[in-house]
Length: 367
Ligand code: KG4
Ligand code: ZN
Image (cartoon, rainbow, N blue to C red):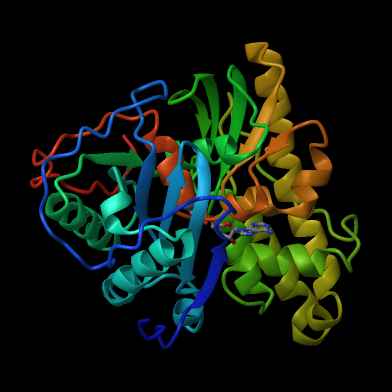
């Protein structure tokens, strides 16, 4: 068993009973004949997928078999970045480099499988921090190449949408999807698994970014969404009127909101802000939730898509869950970044057969 990393929080999603793994050593990187890897599923998805995700500050690996999660290991670097109040890209890349191998090994251990059992490797190709992405892409390429497996490059946003299919009783397209994370806020029409058409996006900050910036202004920790969510339960959401800019179409804008919070905090002064922190958190959350829920409802009206799904880190927010009681939310364990959702998306993406992926590159921004 390897040593655990010195920093970082480990979250795991245990293997389900009944999966018979073989007992080959995990690091037996012995080349064999290329694997076909294609069976079942819409795009000929392979049965056992090893997925790697390193797009931001979570180092994650998962084993997913026919859409069933055998293991999902997420090592968060949040503590490492907390003192900077946000992710420092260079620090993130270096930490991914240290963590990627132990995280993959832990995922294999927890799924009780060996690399010899794996039929396909999936990896987040973008968007994200390019230095961070490159660590995962290089690791995935190396594993796939050594085992002569196909590789599936996955778009991170497709991964968030595909987190819905990890639900034991998943929502099926067509549906409308609100994707709200630290890096993105989008409204998507999903006509079929593996496809989505963008209807709207944020013109400035993402919803999760707004939570993180608000948290910093209130002197709370990083990442801020969960902190504000927790504190908001003790506060009055009507206490402060914090407006969210209304922009045309189905787009979003959150940058003005954080300025409104900044002014409110300045006006109150340090002592009063301290006393009213729960009210400020509740009012701030209410404004973000109202903007997200309002636009989602407008999109439903315009498109005629009756069913709404919500994915991404902000989908964990209890205020948003309360505001959209009829929507389907991604399973809580798979809202924030994880590799199980990447394995799920890989079922509907194109495989690159061995060894055609050696020059595959990461991309930083969404197309
Ligand atoms: O999807 P994610 O893990 O990473 C990106 O792809 O960006 O989302 C992270 C974001 C962070 O901004 C974090 O503050 C936010 O999701 N978040 C939340 C909650 N939990 C995480 N926002 C609101 N309420 C939460 N409970
Ligand atoms: Zn994400």
